[in-house]
Length: 228
Image 1 (cartoon, one colour):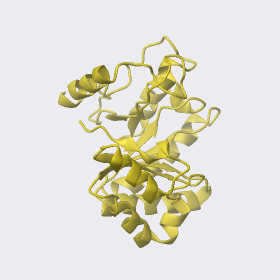
Image 2 (cartoon, helix red, strand yellow):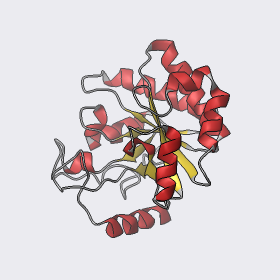
Image 3 (cartoon, helix red, strand yellow):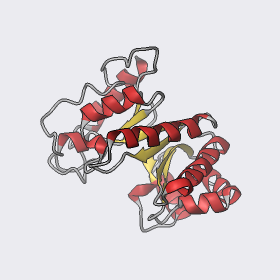
């Protein structure tokens, strides 16, 4: 199990400044955000100059990049072109997981399945895994919907942020049904919806800040699940 810091935690800094800050905090692993509205890497820039993006992501002062968080604003075929470029970036930098948002609430389910299936197909061509992030205001805010998406999109994973289930519309409910959290296998020969995790610290009722749980307990839980 690796504990990594996300560059998304420092939105006002440049990517190089953020990496320096994370290293100064003695983290050895990091997740880089590739968000079109962010201040670090943008998907459109990755697609326009892949070699430059690869160089930037390799210049991490011995810290290992373990995942990318990708948010693309482009629509239609341009969306998939930019995503494919992010997959090539991940392959070149030996990163396995790309975390993407699920569709907004109200997105037709079949449309979302087709979209995610296309992302997974593009990613698998470069040996990369796609994970949807649990997030309030999107289809993944409901853990039951996450399970159904995993059942319908072979190879899809979940980047679990428990704060969105602890403090969101499903507060007080159970999210153990998400495969990879001691839940069930998807069956039919498909792989389990294995999950990465986003953990944040703040008041127990603040979804924007975190789940308010003990860090040691979270790490021990993660180690147990990784050992399964």
